[in-house]
Image (cartoon, rainbow, N blue to C red; front, top):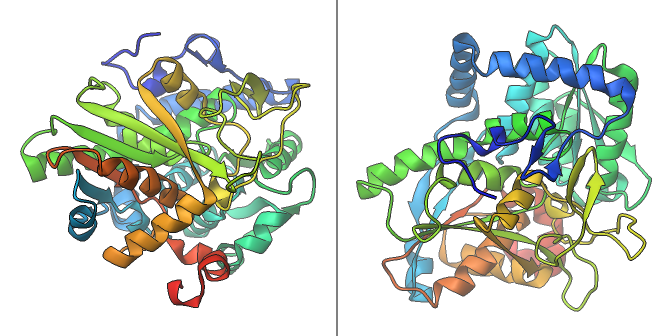
Length: 411
């Protein structure tokens, strides 16, 4: 499988919506085929419409707050005594995470289609919080589907969703986490697609939702590319981009502009959730050589049991606690353009302690997985290597978990 350098990866699928001939597609009920076809046509027109692009860019700048900062972590770099460690602080975006890009674009699409209702799924609560913010901004009524387990462990974001006027629909089936929230959200859309627009919170689901999310979050890498040229005068010769990977929205957005570069110059490293130390449960299908299956309308690597049934996952990070992964990342793995590893709950917590000790940033537990591997590998690299970690979320939402696991002084 060869990645085409002149075409964005989101468009490098075949006529049936498959990347690399086997990842993605649109495995949906007959009742959803027409709504998905309609949405596909609308999106393809809007993304080429100069007025829509102008409107998107206006809100990215004046509502979301783009561009977010790109800074060197001097203290952490000196402590590790290896590669230079930099970070793109995407958590500076309005609402505290990268999810606001996708939510804003979906709200604009919803308005353009003349619909007044918008629904979405969420795990860590950030996708739900951002969608509730965008819905309020554009005068839409909003429902958020969220696993009951996640509602308990992500109270700050749930409070924010309700404050923004959204209705949270608790999901009690299965593991009561993100996978079940996505399933229930899709079921609701089947019955209400005439009046309601659905926003899938990550680069997962039927082909069109993967494309919309990837197109939206690619703002991160567009900004970073410009910031690198301003900082170094060019794109560095030895660079490594680390990002956590759950569904895969922040990582794809962080990488998109750099996928076309040779991996000897720019290496892409995705870090999945390895789960609790000494546990068989994880949320790392790419790292653990899981088999291909169908989940939420798309072919992808999925955590499964020996009978091919979707297996429950476990992670301290609600945003990474997903049984599957974006078809885009499956393709990047098989094409060997990106490397995937995992970090345990304990490694993520230790990374949080390390980063907050030396630097004035407060990454959520999702990017702490990426920081864990980046810091580990930085020690073995020379100072002329540029490591960049996407700090894609703020730890405000994780305060109860951090307090419970690390103590009050870390909150």
